[in-house]
Length: 304
Image (tube, rainbow, N blue to C red; front, side):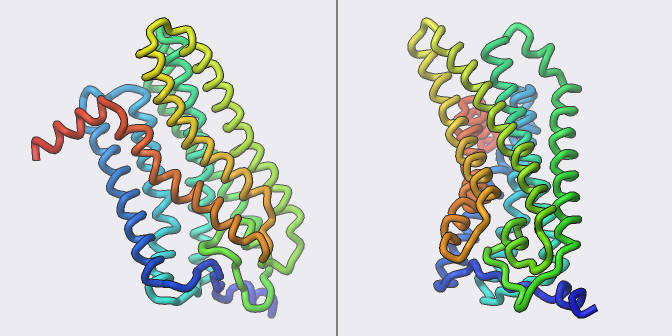
């Protein structure tokens, strides 16, 4: 009974440094930028008839997912930074863990789906609309979300079985899997095995699929005779590949690296890369550099 009572105590997040005002301004600015840019992209794609294609449908889903993904952590972190209160209740922590894992896993699979979309568009353009039809795209996105939700259920269920030690300190600025495992005083072997399996399914496998898609894409691009056309397509694909690589490599590293006090700064940086930087850069790299989206955005602004 005593162990159960301890489990239900508040957690104390240790990830916040001194300089609350600077942290608050930075987090507020980043969250506002993520929300506005992704919502703008989502809205433009939904209302502009010229953007009703499989590629833009997947991009709109990515924008919506990025808003949800960042909303799980950044507002709570902002409140903690402003108030200086590093406590978070057990139930809120578990809820944050569930949705962070759910949206993160869904985004990992969706990025792989988007790479496949680009592979079909560039390497097999004549069959693009046959392969990437509406039913297939809806099924693709639904599958990504269902798999992400199931992954979150497994991790959350395993975490609920843990008991936590002492002062319930979590060596992070939000509730994530490995920092909570590090804070546990019960056996975590099963949870660690689940993390390794999930990393393989949601990290390594999608990343290898993305790399395989882009290898074929680059091979096709090199066959384009027009240097201008080749440069244009290669520039777009290299930008996509850069952002995707940051997301996957940071995520894979983070979930295969049991954090310790001496390496906590590395965990912070990797969490920032895949949890904050990726949602911030996605609308810029995927959409706001795109000429069709720019035209639609200008058209929408002139109507206001």
